[in-house]
Image (cartoon, rainbow, N blue to C red; front, top):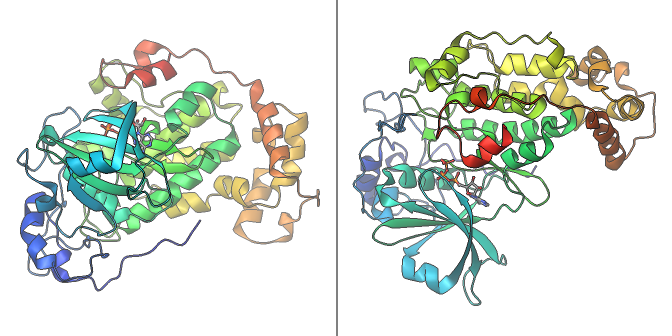
Length: 451
Ligand SMILES: Nc1ncnc2c1ncn2[C@@H]1O[C@H](COP(=O)(O)OP(=O)(O)OP(=O)(O)O)[C@@H](O)[C@H]1O
């Protein structure tokens, strides 16, 4: 993965203390003259002398009830975004129309539609022809402002959808973004039912690399789910939809700052979110739910109402020794259990997940070629891998690591073996009423996946 530009520690103080969207407007003037490439710093809210703030911005509640800081509809983005990154262009809608041609709708979310947009000849396209244009109504509250500001803050990471330009008219903001042609991870799971362990491990590794970056940059996404993980044509992951993301006071968000306010998608919410006192670790929990969905094809915590889902999140103990887990390797189960640890302080960090042997094995372990032979002769081989040997291999570069099969197989061989291994794995028909407990909880495509 390409090195990611890190924010400098010594960013001007005036740009650093964005506590609320209201503050951003007044701070904009102070930011003039500072480095335009420098994103606002996620530093202690209020600056040195300011009051300690639990959270930079408060998200709307999951129910849709607003916990959001009030942003007057119709206010201009330029006035609200503060120290805007000059890499993101801002303009009026007529400039959008002169530079881009809006095409077919490719997605629709809570707040607006997403359409393909094509750069017109002579426009600023940086060599690319097609983009995604997300229209966000200004009456969606602070969502648009937050999304733009955070996307700019994180801009530059290959695992994050790049924001190119922002345009506006009286009612709407238009976000022109990099187009992800591979659809959503949700669609892949809907097609495949369950993913192979190798594919799931690669998805989780890429997701963790992005989350590690977000957390180091002081951003908690708060809405990690397969709907918000987009894919490029080549199948690489891009994290999208920062509408519920928040910036925390400390760049290293595990150093104590707590978030408040219930936010997220019910089935992916961590137990501590329900208690209203949480941290960046909620993203790891949600990614654990995603991993469960990838490997089992079902959600781990289900119920026929939002309250029942919340109850399951708080109380249901997953039985990793039951028959339904037989085709899943012990180490995959181990990782899920550690990501879904209800004790947030003991839950793995993104870095811990990246170092877990199950992830390392599929990424870089020299033993994988040897085990791919096993896969080619055994249909459900993942649980039969000598995972203790893999662990020794991953944790040290000991002799355990020397593979019996010195000839490294090419990627295709491994993929073929895994494909063979998973073809016989079938998921039982999930009960729609359990997985889709309440109308409107999931988008239609999600219901399609789960029926
Ligand atoms: N950059 C992109 N490239 C391709 N498709 C995209 C892109 N951004 C969004 N989409 C599509 O549009 C859909 C809605 O986008 P997004 O999730 O950002 O909107 P939202 O209104 O915030 O949705 P949600 O209801 O999930 O909060 C996505 O699920 C995806 O299918």
